[in-house]
Image (cartoon, rainbow, N blue to C red):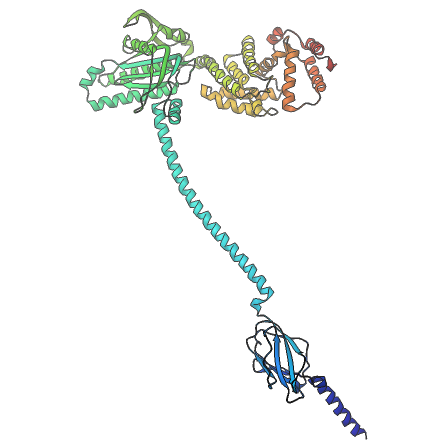
Length: 611
């Protein structure tokens, strides 16, 4: 009984399983799925479990579907959603094959027809074919990264290549530029040897140079005694070599004294001092150059006499006056000077004596304090009548060194005392051009007053000549730094001093002395007498009657530069300063109109608001 019941139960369960597997009410169902003709994904005979979704590798893209229906006369139509455009034709074969399916999601739908009755479409199974790795999002990200990296590398490569090309082009341009600059420098050097620098620059800029009149120029002429006779007796090559040796030495002499060589004509040599840069010392410098030329020829004469050779002797003539200088013509340019002064200098040379330096009475007036001169009297000059002439015998004994040919420090100090006036003129022109409008106190008038007072006080206090020169340099440049940095002007003043002073012949000893004065003054170190004198010169206005009006200008300037907010507070500090102020030198104390306490009262009366 129990055995029979078990068999019946097993049969019922089998039937239920098949009914579940094959579909209820005789509906069709999937029997098996074959992958790539050899692998079975689902097989009803094995009792495989039907899944809602099968996920396949991309290589399993050939599928064979086999269905089952209880009605053996049933016809089938398939539709693979995601691949087919329409349903397949009706067929009694319950199979459908798909090859080379693309990665994606597919759903198999089936319709059946039995006894000419079509069933509803039935979803049998769903599967998804995975894409190959190279089509996955990860791969796409990798491709994007690689593409970006490739583009970046390519960009860097192209950029590097472009930079290399640019560097190569720049190298070529730099090389060409250096060649052009080298040629330009050669041209400028050649032009500078032929013409004064300013004139050469003007020609290069405008294509021509304007002529200028100079009122104070000293012209020197020299020629060789009996040159025509010598030229007939001496081999031309030897003659030219000798002339070249003379003139080469003369060129070095005129360059030493900042004299402008004009030209040579045969055996004649012509130069002029005071052009193209005007100066007050050109008569002294031209006479110094003439003495060196004379000394050179005298030494050469001794050597030639000792060797039994014919010696050459020169005449030198000098005159001071007005000339016109410029360039004539457009080819083979030559810088020249014209005027009565040139003709007179030529007459001084032709009226001279071999081996002597003949100067006019005009030149004598400028050099008589520096040189020993022998009066020749009034000498007849062609087209000029009688003119005073002098032979220059040498430097005065108290002004020359041990070898008697070179000037000593006293001479140099006296010369620089004149040169500093040229430096002051140049500096004043520069300051006038650079000074801003709000410098109502430190204007050009104030700067000039410092220089005047410094010289006056230094002379009255009997400071030595050399110290006076350093002090005058310091006085000239002490306020120049304000134009660059109003709050910290010291080093800017020193820089401007070192820039301009050497151009006017001031050596390192004078410059360093002036620098130490400027730095000590700003540091309020008053051990040096020069610092005390300069402070008194700067503060000269503190003892004047117009002090209250002047101090108003100082407030206006400092307020513009430093931005004081409280005018009363500023005046209180100034009142305190003037109340205790005392001049350092006796001369400054004598020159003042009021002392500090009196000026404080004057300031209170002038500015009642500061009480």
